Image (cartoon, rainbow, N blue to C red; front, side, top):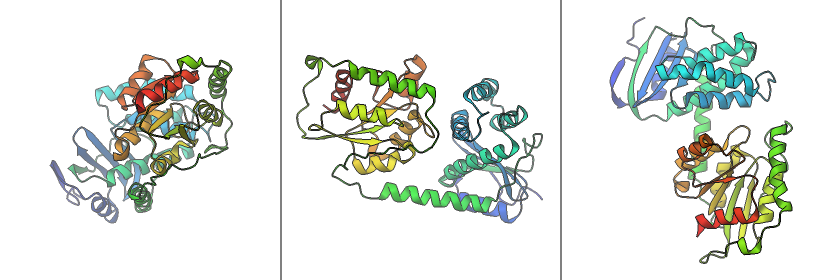
Length: 355
């Protein structure tokens, strides 16, 4: 078989991702499809038309680490120490533009017994869905198909049905588009009260510690003279609070006067976008450390949506390091509120951005 099934185009042109994948599947192709759009590249590895791995270069290890965090809820050995060690070993290789460092990292996790081969299959499938979803939205770029695969020297864990994966990704994309195109409800929703987070796992010691420190501020009554006056021009401001801790959400609601603020409480970051679209908040308070989707990732997603390009987004966290503040700036957050904070601290930050 030659490279002619889909050709090789080095110059940017209109892309038809679905057609490319359909041709590769129907011809039971073996090799690697490489797609380039500017500085970003997609790599889709196939064996007889089945997908063995998929990756793209943007935020490579942030994305891998996010999936590993979710997988760690099912695999206790995949703890934070293992993930940090993995990144120390492999992330620096990306600086030398080494290929497939993420796949090498997965192989290393299996070889060190942090995950099983079955766990690797779960991880590869979830990564593939994310990669394919982004790939299917491409409109232009350049591509090439080669039979040489740089992952051939490493263990193979699976051969996934590419047609089925694409169908699942298309459904997900359609669902997301329907959410984005649905009309926004002008009137703010009632406060959303939930008692259960997405996962049934108990909060870890670190999170409990965060919550305790934050709640300690409730025992320190704020000086009424330190609380700024309400801004004029609007009777009721909607504040969306996204945090996986119900205790923290209740504390923020306690601090904000119900006569001036409608507080929309969201404890599931995965469902946050839909709920924020409906409530159309004047300001968003966003916890950094949440399961399934951390605050930086969610802030970045919100900024990509046309409705939230200018909405103030305040990162709320116990972290005070320079790197954490730099991350907040990179995702274009509007401010940074450090836990624990008093009622005065919270109100000053809110009024600063809604005045």
